[in-house]
Length: 585
Ligand SMILES: Cc1cc2nc3c(=O)[nH]c(=O)nc-3n(C[C@H](O)[C@H](O)[C@H](O)COP(=O)(O)OP(=O)(O)OC[C@H]3O[C@@H](n4cnc5c(N)ncnc54)[C@H](O)[C@@H]3O)c2cc1C
Image (tube, rainbow, N blue to C red; front, side, top):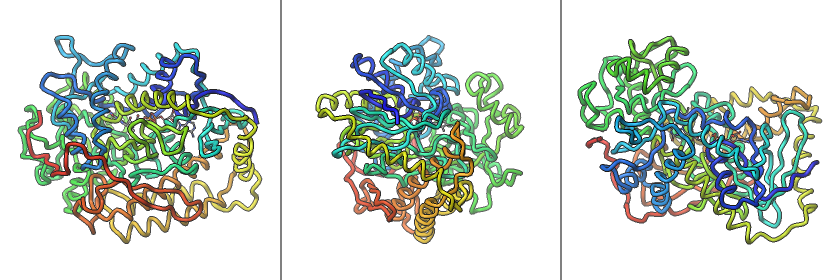
């Protein structure tokens, strides 16, 4: 197996991976950086982000407001020292992007424009029309090109971390176009592999979001934190799951049921405000968990609209007018037209909640370090404990920047302390990957089909770990995922060729998703309370006495994982009531 020697490996070239690469190259120009991605960087999911990125910039806003919105939005499961660091770094990062060329929308006076976003009580979401992620990723990508110390390995599929004496010393990966394996030897690894929403059948996530980075760390012994918190976004297209950004509501769109009622007023989201007037009360700008849960209740009450794509509610933007829609929401206009044949200028568009984001991930501290020396993680694959039990829209894109950079700085500090290593001592670890792949190619008793197992996994996740959960359903979910993991050891590789073998990649991705699904189901069963995105019909209240703590799931090979807990860091905001009935300016 060919060896690539480098100083730092980054797995993932989305927002978090590119930001980390730039920070490494700028701060320590002599370091060799290997940037590995299973797709061309601009195809990373960050590119699909629409609505925008949050950072305090306007005079009527303050760090205190951003702090309290984030902590309350996360139902007090966020680590408050982490939130503190984040809110102060956020505007610096967004201005840095501006200097690198990101075309933020402007106010008439030329200053940066912001829009309202769910759960944010002040306007602080910077945006570039409804293509913010595209512009952010483009800016990062083109900036990264100026650093010769960054070597890109596009279309390389990262497989296993190389561990030695308890330290992470590199990774194995497959060059996808040839099927050849490589071992990357490094002093530190930063995982920026993105989320795992694809373990659910109905998701806004790109097909590549299969949690490979999360699973890689989990298999190597890193704990996964708060995995049971899976975010449903309230407004997805009912047939494809494509996202209609929260900016639809930020710009003034309203949600109605089959009686034409703005039903959110019945769920503690404030009194109705006149349509077309500035949003004075929270209503449609409540947080995502609350809005998705309100949909579920409307469904139980029979208040949803039956459409050819199933039960829905309606997102009405007609009153915004053609000019504003074309200027501020051009992608939304196009998506609704292309996929449903609905012109949002003339008609309301049917929508329903859709799996969108993982609050949980590889456990890191505020310095983006995992408990495994030499292993760092940032972006959606990590749980730095910024988002707690429910992420606020537009905090994630900034999280990539703030903690991508932070992971790089932490890795640079760590490099000073790493002992030298004879390269041959990693060969045995790398050979484990080779054996795993060859076993798939050589197996003649494979009986399980990849797509069959994947379907069963997705159905289980939707049925048992959806918006509302209960003990019996979760226990069934844990058992089923455990069974699927066992059956996965007999999965059949149908295509035995070596060149760009998509059958093989999908099998590997399924393995990653099953690992993630295990942590989600086990964590959700153990958490007997309702908090943020984790809502249980049998434990309807938040239980701060027993569960104001992070779930930590530790892999135990083929057995069920071990669960323990970590205290939440509370600095200045004791747990309180989440109130979304007040003013929203
Ligand atoms: C449709 C949509 C709209 C969104 N809108 C917003 C928004 O407006 N505001 C906001 O704040 N957030 C938004 N989000 C959330 C946010 O965009 C994501 O959380 C964020 O972009 C994730 O970035 P990342 O860098 O962690 O991962 P990604 O951008 O997903 O990148 C992951 C990288 O890892 C690589 N990778 C994965 N597995 C492997 C492997 N095995 N080997 C090698 N490489 C691998 C991939 O190739 C890719 O380069 C949105 C999300 C979606 C899905």
